[in-house]
Image (cartoon, rainbow, N blue to C red):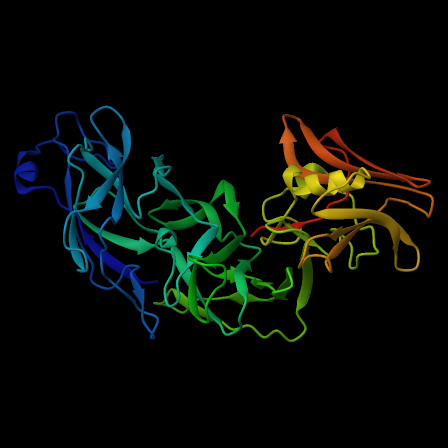
Length: 431
């Protein structure tokens, strides 16, 4: 794991006037003066640039902020200290002129408003969605920290970096998932980084910092420091015909990091990947999956599930998918009432040799060749109905899309159901 040195100091006059001793947990007796200036220098690296040899080079940028967590004379504090000059340099001074911190418990980069220090633990968050830049990584995800109240502070990475090379076009997102926690809430002590008791996540998704696709090149994804068990990598492609494809390759075994490095390359061999397709039915509309959760084709009904299972973080299918919102389904509902909708039409029809259900097809130019089929539950040629979860809750009630057909009569309705009901799920792509 790469490390670098931050020399943290107060103005000389302040240091010489402090006659109170620091307590082990960063507390200090009242009467100590506030630390408003922190000097920072690095021997090895921070987050600015990743070179071809996978070393990070230090260059502080204007606006960079450190988070300083400690105590004032009256309460625990988490304050931002902003770079004061020396942009582009490996050394810098960080200031907070109004700080009332008198004892430092932890320092972290970058500043996070919701970071906390309590009971000897720094709690912070590794972003689960990170912005991509060719040859580098999301600065907000490059979490570094120091625990302790000493003046000379050594910061350690709370993350490792996974290097992924994009050689294909139309890649919109890359996701890494694992049976281990990779992002979300983390707890950091002097012993290292562990996942928090709640709020940690088992996936990270990389999306373009600008534009809609990832240009070809190398990208670095920040994940929790430590080895990664059974890593799975997924690419999402958005196609010119308003369809999308997710390609997933499941890994096995444990991805380990060599001693002294926090960068690991992941190569993707797409031989025999799992593929899922999705279809957009109108401009700026969601991309509906080709089939239901628990199914392997559009003609299969799939599994029913509770609301909690249908909307669980990272979802049933992985981090690229989610349960559609009520708004995502509004045009489907209008069409399924047998009413005219300017974007999509609905018909009750047969898919495959025996499955009946509700087929939605785009109406406008560019979308008229796209359709998705929602199987009815136990339907036949004369009669069928289906209940699909939305991801929109109203207190303890959840909006459920109800589709109905009976002897030529097509209808739909919103049902506000309890969260322990069992309904079908038709995922949509998150991005």
